[in-house]
Length: 487
Image (tube, rainbow, N blue to C red; front, side):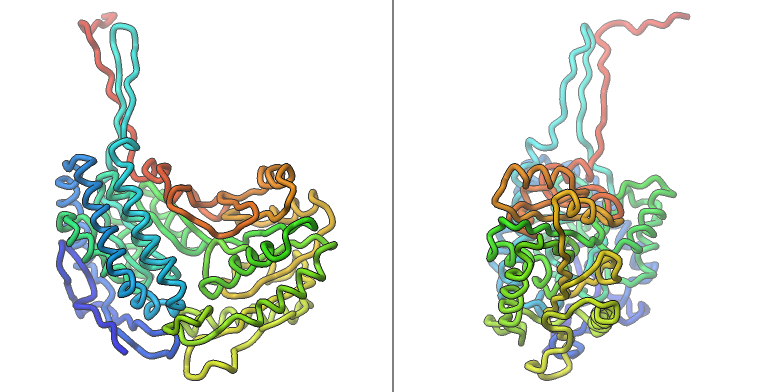
């Protein structure tokens, strides 16, 4: 099984290699097999990519909004035509089941390109301001060269979520995927060029923790958009702030789901499972603290255990598989260590908690795990695990649940399950999070803004709001008469 790309980097419309860079091994998580070897970008590669983007950005910004929109929409069409092929590559890259990648990964990237391609002509309009005899107008202009830094859980989607608004606004981008999942973004770059994007407008370079600072600190980079962990976000935002660069930070969370006694049981359990087990729990917005009102607790746990133990774990390339492995051996070891902390600190293990015996080979599998009797001070209730580990906590009153849900440094997402819509809206208004759901969870269509508050980041992905983060406002005052001075 191989997925070796033509070369490690895609710069100025062609594949580029520099074997002086550190070797990056792409490992298929289901077997532990090395499926590709690439090289991290050397300083020379970084310079080449940024220079290419800087040159091409002026040409691209000169395209009319309709012209830019046609390119993005053509790229979306090509992604949809090749959805199966791209989904299979995403499964190799991440270990996520094909039944998931085929509906949630390349296709959501295509949605983003199509959406931004369709709204450019109106969303980037400025305004005309009458000032008596004089007048003024505003216009949105691109920032220039934008750096995108991706995470390993949704490589193709994240590449598109960052590229689509950046390119729509007239910027050029240098995108660095995670070294854990280096393959998918290269295909997105190929498709954009095929769709008519000028060479150099979207470049992909591989890299590790040494590569990011070279990009963030580059004098010709105007903005950095990061999807990653809170510690990484703090470093990147700090470096960018020192140079007054624009930033978008989409970081981690420890999000709450509040399930009230009157909630529909099956829907609430479905939401909790989507918010903990989809992508093997490797989703930043996951609702990993599930607060269940005491009147529903026992029924909730009994049915949750039954449904969780029925999840089909297996070969990600088998369409019957519902849960694949974690992305790496290191990630599995991290999650297992959290499970041991949960046991040691007194949480009750309802199901899971180990490595499944139904899967053979050297893959990085772990059972979907549910803990009950979790208290707010336990490690598993405070720290982001990023694996299929659900913490169920009890509560009595609405006020108590809100206070405990907000008692975290994170503020990415939250969910509420109840049949009382007055209460639902009252509660979400008090929850400290950037993206919230009522009676569902983790749905992120491109039409709505996505992003966090507090330590979970700032700026927004998706929706027309994202264009504001990839452009800046230029104001022009027009004097219609002679210019006068008091001296």
